[in-house]
Figure 1 (cartoon, rainbow, N blue to C red):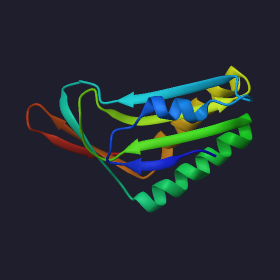
Figure 2: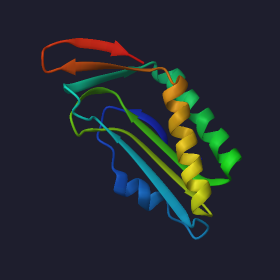
Figure 3: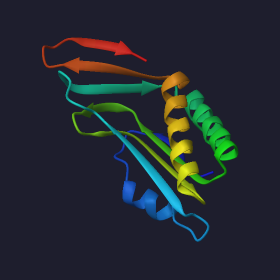
Figure 4: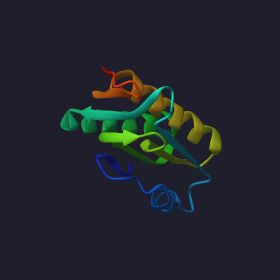
Length: 132
């Protein structure tokens, strides 16, 4: 397993890619989730870090086993993020590209399904709304 973290700092995608490369990895898939402008000016993310990290580690282990992955990195941001800021980075390495793609998608869907991370939309009209 690779690097699993929740951080308030920006994420260095280039360094994660460099770390994922090795002679046994033929495909690396990187997912970068960003704050999009759909009527909001920012989002705030908060999590119960101890539980969220354990759950992320469990998802990484499941994906590694199910898709024969060589490496998995998952980094999620907390705090106030503006439009175009990076929220989440998933880096998956596998011997072959199909497993890398499938493993990355599995991880993303599992994160969205049950990881205890909440987000608050901050609208340009001054409205705020928390949701999971």
